[in-house]
Length: 137
Image 1: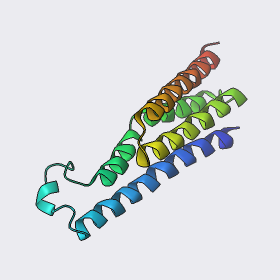
Image 2 (image 1 turned 45 degrees about the horizontal axis):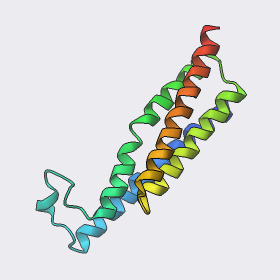
Image 3 (image 1 turned 30 degrees about the horizontal axis):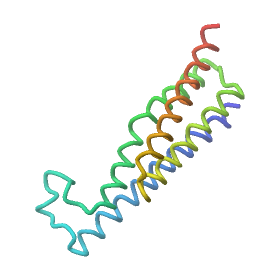
């Protein structure tokens, strides 16, 4: 079961690295196409075009809630509490992160994005509750 749980971590890390490369490509492209100058981005990335900022924001989001997810995975592995429920919740959380990124980097519909984010928070809370319940009881 541990290896199955680690698959969710691998998928979350894949999402983060793909976003990092997409961010780099979009930023380099905007510099090459002269949509932005080096002097405009020396102290802030606000001058990048909208699409580059969307991707960068989606990338930055991978260092927020997913850090709590990683903490939960470590707890599960250290305490040996990995269960089918935890695996389902872990993969659900990661799937919601993929949907959130898709919305964030395409139409950026704020209502959809916030709803997916909120469901992700609920899934993450359920995941942590399941872990702590198995550790404590």
